[in-house]
Length: 210
Ligand code: C5P
Image 1: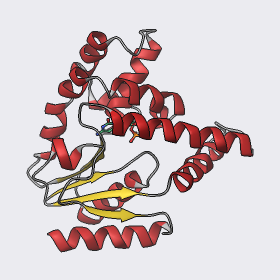
Image 2: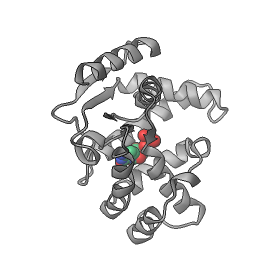
Image 3: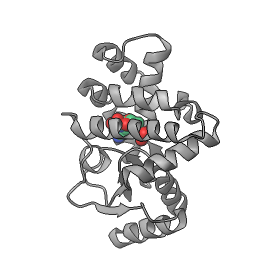
Image 4: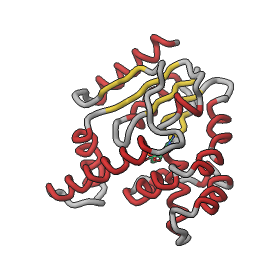
């Protein structure tokens, strides 16, 4: 069984993907990490993010084993990711790796922006996880404050909301694989749901497709 989970930044799709993968004992790939990895390497080496050729070459040589999830979860890496993710050649360079992961014999769970539409259009279960921009900003803000990456002030919360709005616009507005809901996806709005309620709803949606 392939489970495809898509949705905007900080919608809770990563948490749900991990929980679904744990429930069915399936391998899980957070595909945002691939784009974050490319964006972070560009930054570390001082390349401008709009250099498509270099970004594509880095994507081509990306090794899953080298991606450090903790280090890549920063705001800067997320911002850089959404810039390089708009480059068609970067997306194409990461296609085989993601499709190979999805094609593993026992199945897999992948989460991102284009899993149900581009990477695994034949996935048995597709979820589109979303929440209001305010709620997503609040969650991301809490996470950043918890990690000491951001001050606990109203101004900082407003800045996180602006970040989210900019990323939504970039991810939905790009020409190549924009964030859209697959025709056969189940939409799960987690704005008013606690984590356990969201997990239960997600598992029920997957079970219904199995
Ligand atoms: O999900 P996450 O916030 O880690 O993703 C970072 C960025 O990577 C997103 O804003 C998006 O631009 C890009 N991305 C993508 N396609 C995916 C996963 C992530 O374009 N499948």
